[in-house]
Amino acid sequence: MSLVKLYDTTLRDGTQAEDISLLVEDKIRIARKLDEIGIHYIEGGWPGSNPKDVAFFKDIKKEKLSHAKIAAFGSTRRAKITPDKDQNIRTLIQAEPDVVTIFGKTWDFHVREALRISLDENLELIFDSLEYLKAHAPEVFYDAEHFFDGYKANAEYAIKTLKAAEDAKVDCIVLCDTNGGTMPFELAEIIKDVRKHIKTPLGIHTHNDSECAVANSLLAVDQGIVQVQGTINGFGERCGNANLCSVIPALKLKMKQECISGDQLKKLRELSRYVYELANFSPNKHQPYVGNSAFAHKGGVHVSAIQRHPETYEHIRPELVGNTTRVLISDLSGRANILAKAEEFQINLDSKDPVTLDILDNIKEMENRGYQFEGAEASFELLMKRALGTHKKFFSVIGFRVIDEKRHEEQKTISEATIMVKVGGKVEHTAAEGNGPVNALDNAIRKALEKFYPRIKEVKLLDYKVRVLPAGQGTASATRVLIESGDKESRWGTVGVSDNIIDASYQALIDCIEYKLHKDEEAEIRRK
Ligand SMILES: CC(=O)SCCNC(=O)CCNC(=O)[C@H](O)C(C)(C)COP(=O)(O)OP(=O)(O)OC[C@H]1O[C@@H](n2cnc3c(N)ncnc32)[C@H](O)[C@@H]1OP(=O)(O)O
Ligand SMILES: CC(=O)C(=O)O
Image (tube, rainbow, N blue to C red; front, side, top):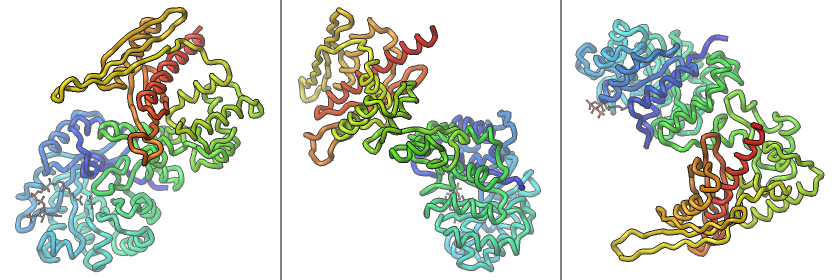
């Protein structure tokens, strides 16, 4: 099986996506990660476009990449000038990349309307830009922009443009589905025909406007293409590019194509999340292979079956891409979900134990009131402990009060909370201000408990989400609050539901603190 080369364009086409912008430092950090995972080519940007991309090519030279080659992107020369005078081509050479990739026009419509030159002149543009670059760069790739649309409009001319690139002796000709509208069955037929005319190695670059970018890339490999271009998480112009986080495992695990090693593949989820983080995006939890939900089982029937054989509802073993199986708890749960969860928390439950059925009934009744335990595993663990009688009461809350006050129209609203807690025999009464009522309550709870349990200081509130339940009752609706918290070691989610948003937040905050205290005490016992 020959090697399929992976060409990542997250740093170029990925940054053409709406809302994505990466600093030079971010690009360098992502390039290091791409190299670690075994990407063969990293397209760093278009040096003729902006100073940031010029800086990238300068800075990346200081990095010791283990094997990835760095590619610089640009276009064929402008009409009426020679390549050596073309500013874009000059900057590509000055960037001194390992590879230069330029795009040129394939579609006669684009030649006439976008470039406004003759069809023959475009062939000259392609040939002499590439011939010149071949003499000045170690490796040269040609992106045949709009190849599939061009072929459908005028196959003869589209093939002529590829021949011009072949005559210039480029190292790879990349067929681009630039508008992302090509269907997989069309693409396979077109590539078959191209292979009759072109002997240069072929690559594929697809966009996702018809949701076919990954399928098209895989089909192209099936048709003998040796280079696949794409981006991490599918970031890219409009609807994005072929998502390498789906392409790579499909190539490796399903098509048995050599591309990266099994150990590198295990870093795929980490890479996906790293890129989301640096792009300042929340990860897509439903993303195939690498998303949190990719191997999360909710239906009772599914959970029961995966415990017997994971393959019953998992298309691959999640560990192969660095992911894990998760069992979700909801009103679609059966006993199998509860048992699986209990096992995860190292709680011994028996499927015939009446407590299991009690927990199940309790969950279904709570979900009916609006609770949701997906994403609130810590509240769920506390619920199990309460049902089993293993829950420890570290403190009790005697009462709390939250006040919001606006003393003058021009002034900021002030939030203050007071709380009375009992720890052992001691009653503590504290007050705290906050940035809004929930923050004031959070501050007051912590202030009251920290002197008894100083490790509460380590807890950070990472995310706070409110959902109105059921929708449509306006400000009288019940609310569900989901809180994500974390400390140095882990992250956990808690939930509260009430027709009062402060009360719902209070429940989730108290569960958060109780979970931390249980977790630390159990860790301490294990250490001893
Ligand atoms: C399919 C793709 O994703 S291609 C990549 C697209 N990415 C980008 O455009 C991002 C980076 N681009 C840029 O920074 C700018 O567009 C630049 C610096 C490259 C060019 O800027 P400008 O000179 O202002 O031109 P503009 O942005 O309006 O682009 C249109 C020009 O590109 C020319 N052009 C477009 N494609 C090609 C090509 N394949 N070969 C040569 N020239 C081309 C057009 O003829 C037009 O030139 P004209 O104005 O002289 O008629
Ligand atoms: C080259 C490129 O980005 C495209 O054709 O989509």
